[in-house]
Figure (tube, rainbow, N blue to C red):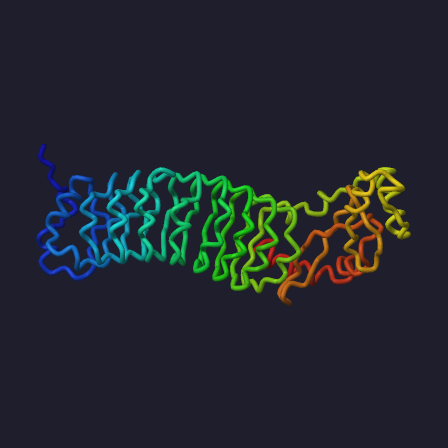
Length: 358
């Protein structure tokens, strides 16, 4: 069956080949798989091609002949209908930029040969159908930019310690419920986008991202942030549309301590000696599990029951950041926190909006 190229696109393969430079641009040409195969047969020196742009066509597959383009640095295949990458993709040893945005790629779309793309620095997988973070990426040690927004990812493997060179990580608009501790090992990370997920908290290791400048957390389920986050020197922090913003005070509750806990608090407060010879070992373990009240003026402890209080902390002189602290009782709320909420409320609210609503 003979296939002809659409006349309205008005392009000719032979004319393009005669005087092409190191970039081939066949974007928006309405190419299907048959057209693409015909195109590849007309390129007489594929080794000369450094940039190959094929975005916004109708491609379902990438032909095996792609392996002939050994000098490729950038391959643009966004806005097609790709469901699979060929094994030959691994032969592109010089590839640094791979754009696959808005296709139909899923967890089984990457061949094992993807691991051979050791020089890859940027990969764009926005708008595909991944349900897991592609494990092949963890072995690409030179990656600097990873874009995986608008997929269906629910869980992240705790392997982010491999991404020591990654500067930009986009994971927004997925279904992620937890961020692994290893995220704190991404020592070069500058931009982290986690918006539009199902996150309730961040690991304390987030404070180790000393290069981080932009953190997007909007449209999640955050009620509080880890106190260690104040160590970051952020320039942008987006928190809008989180419970932290609209009802952080209303959600705070206090369960009355049990008689057991009240007795244990008294023992710890008055420093009464105890051991497993005087009381059962289970009670010794219980007493040893005491947690100190975070009010520096209080010497009390708590066990199961504590009062959750929001404290506004000056964040790099730019705005007040609400942090959740655990106290032994509501009466233990620090005076300085109350004063800040009343005396400086106008100034605080103006700065507060910069982080919560911006």
